[in-house]
Length: 120
Image (tube, rainbow, N blue to C red; front, top):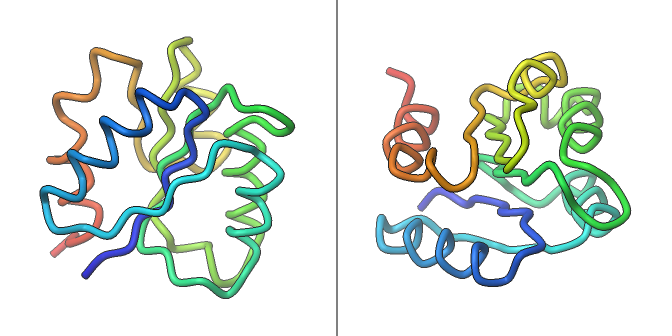
């Protein structure tokens, strides 16, 4: 079962996304703080995909993506950045594989996650 780390500080959004992903059979761990998320990302915990909001307390998602890409064990982990602001270009430069604007991008989220988890 794929394990996804969802880093989102807006509780209602985090709950909705978590429920949607769990309905697909994916295990979702949530975190609402950038520093706490960094500790999880740096740990040896298995995450098959990182789903990062950009605007977070204590550290933005762009920085989390950059830091994840600098870790040997996270270089190939798919990263999706979500944000209400237009930071798609910056997200890709930081190492994200995909970018979604909130809320309009959520309709394609499951499809993109499925593709990133099974690229064959």
